[in-house]
Length: 95
Image (cartoon, rainbow, N blue to C red; front, side):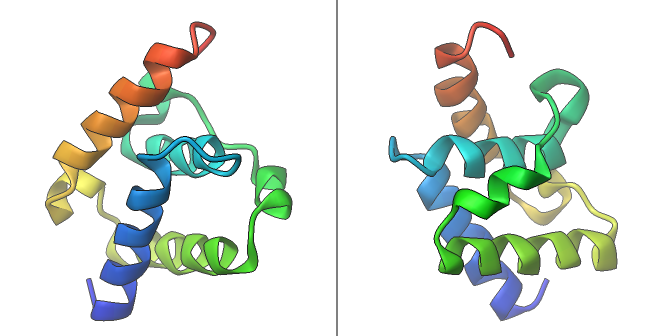
């Protein structure tokens, strides 16, 4: 992972760990990458309703996942994704 990708991913993680209007969408994006069978998928149209900076970070991370073919755990990000899952899936009984 290069520096641009690392910074984009860590910004998205920070957004997902807070409770803002965009946090759930970012959390869904990251959780779909981490464990889609357990955490659910991601509606691509959710990107339309995000700030441009967040959209750009998502594009960077998506391209990174394609390039590396790696899950977050292989990149050292299991712990923050577990925290995101605990936060958002505990709040969403339908997930």
